[in-house]
Length: 197
Length: 197
DNA sequence: CCCATTTTGTAGCGATCGTTACAAAATGGA
DNA sequence: TCCATTTTGTAACGATCGCTACAAAATGGG
Image (cartoon, rainbow over the protein chains, first blue to last red):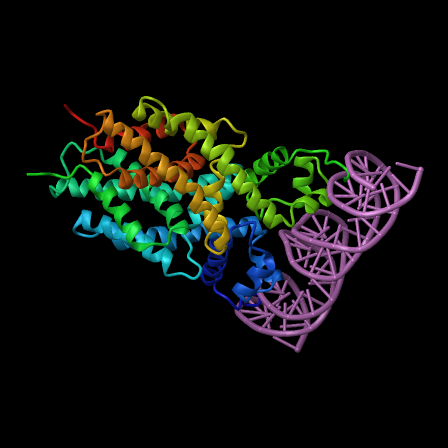
């Protein structure tokens, strides 16, 4: 066998993730990644091949540890509409409680890299696809529970919610104002085709 | 008097704007700005003090030449709702006809820099404030024309439209698909409180 | 106990980063 | 025409960029 590694890969990815999340791909240096992970450049390049491919691994890590985690935490609640509302509320809380506030690695990367990097775009498409599907499932459960009208087009509304979520991510970095964001989420939720018996 | 400058400042700002727009602040080098503007670093640093302050000038330039131009072009049309619709449609067209597609310098900068740079955030706030006000005025004219219900809260709906616009900007970089975006804009427009006589 | 294998730390590679010093070039006023 | 003033082109500054060569360190199998 070989010399054992001093670090567990998920921990390295989590720490690198926070750096890329805060500073972006171009704004993150390998020196900065060394400091954040505690690994030397040698070890980083030994396990990952380049800054680019480390970033790709970090994107996958983010999709599992943040996106999927938040889906499981909020969008699978018994009360589907209440879970959806809490998902949006927690998005702002999640952003604003960080110093400095950090929006979403997928949205950041979309505007920084997805126009030119097709591999990155495919990863973002996959991550946001998970969200769109989770929104659609959540809305479908709300329909079955009688919260939404039976003729609700869940797929289209899921895409609309994804659109609004991405809007919230941009807006919350410019206007870190809970009251404003809460009012915006009110508007998003009120637009859904709720069932008036 | 002194030696005359070989270039007009608005032209320099427009060319620098396109570079920052496409590659972001961190992803743009001064060498790249030299090539795009035709000026040497000496001349750039003579007229602007630093890359940072050139970027600030570029942001102001963008607000006038792109944001305000698009407001005047679409949101002041006689048919307010039709103008609003065309504003959203043209947003996608505007993005997708560029190679590579470029979303919006304000949104890009919001996710790259506004969390940590308060001066930049203030500029973004100003630019998006222009848009929010223009949306509100447009909606108000739609109310007066009987297109929207008289009890429409134009300020809140303006903020909602701004939210959706920012969502469109992110989504269009990941899904450069006209049909998908058009359907999303359908949903945004349909949510408005239209007047059913 | 030595070997094959992998990770680690050190040190530094060539390239590029943002920025600047300096002098020649180009103007209008005196 | 000479001067004061500003822009221009050339050249390069120290710092940092992504990345790597190399050998010492640390393991399990033989």
